[in-house]
Structures are given as structure tokens and as C-alpha cells.
Image (cartoon, rainbow, N blue to C red; front, side):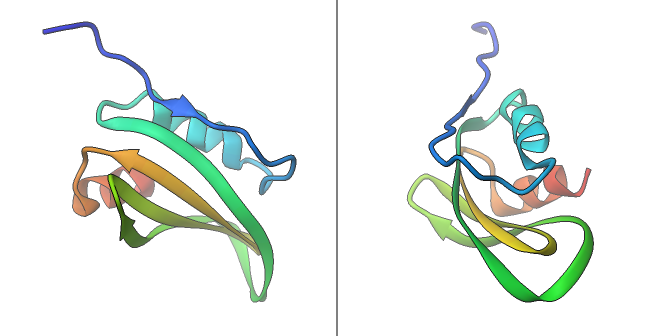
Length: 93
């Protein structure tokens, strides 16, 4: 087998949910994760006291993840060969 390659984290936005980048950087080191791109950040009504990541919808080549903390929500696009179940399991850790 070839050497494990780590995924890529695309930082194209200037704002991110506090602590999100650290989590995404850890995800890029996992096998099956290819590219992670944080997307649109917005406000929501509900308040989530701790970071919450959940798989939203499948996209071509991966999944859209919703990251929430406090009243802030951010889309994250993950290109991966993992199944939705495998990705959800990784996000729980």
C-alpha cells in the first residue's frame, strides 16, 4: 500500500466558527477524507452551547456538514470516500 495521504483543508473564508478549524484539521488526517471546504456562515435562533457537527445532505463526492455553536451555523463541504455512517461516526468523536 502507498503512504497515507492527508486531506486538504481549503480556507477561502475569513470567518469561521471558533474551534471549527482545529476540528477540521484533525479530520483531514483521517483516511478517506480528501478535501474539506468551510462554507457560508450565518446566524440561527436556537442556542447550542457546545460545537455540534452533523451530516446534512450528500453532495457529489461527499457530504455537506452543518457545524453549530451558540447562535452561529456554518456549512462545511467534505469530499470523501467514506459512507455517511462512517463520517457520522467520525464526527461523534
